Image (cartoon, rainbow, N blue to C red; front, side, top):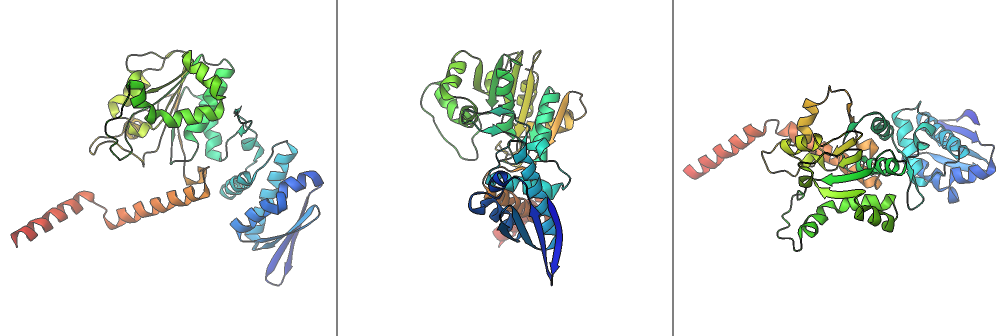
Length: 352
């Protein structure tokens, strides 16, 4: 399949040939769209000749491009229909771990959604996350927005319900405003809390036909409710998902974790960099990492910017904020000292 690099002055070329002409068309993409993605991300050039492609650029970049194309070709041979997004994810995975077999990740289909789309992990951490949900009764998924924490948990819950591995799904999140005050909300109790639960409905309807989901909710097989409604309950034979767990207090987190009954599984997701609790209130998700780390049957999976599966800009935005926060900590390492300094400056100003 692969032919070795050929040096031409300071430029290195590598030729790749693939046997199946039909698969090659999909591999390269319509009008070579997939190759152009690789060219742009690795800053190389590619030239197609029939079922062959000649890559031109620095040797490390060519090695990464060749490895990615070969792994994607193997996916096509296994019947996986790759997209432009898959090309980006594959390149990211192989760059992070060159020895990765993409088939072990992309072919791990969780559930075919109402839109006839395969729901599969798109990174190594997402793969580990799915394995953890299968193997543990309680899983914490912690990481930035867009890493698939809630979406994959929802897919696993729907698959579990369809396969009769649980009798109901319970989806919950704390009703905490994200920084802004929404004020008085009209309507009955359901109408007041419904806006907070909208993201869970969105994910659910992406997995299941709207009418089917509505019917199951009417029957109580699928329940979407604010966290406060969990108090005093015991959830047996259920797949329970707590979303936005960073906005739980210590008391709320303990209350939720002790709702788990026999035959149930719980997935708790959150982003500890996006806490909307009042100042001085410690996040239950932050605290629980110190309390439950060594308990058998519970595991923690951590995501990072390399697991983001939203618009490519989201990954850059997360990285920019991380750099900003790090620079801020470096400039002002002691927040208390900064506050004290400001107070002293104010006092001196007032005395003048």
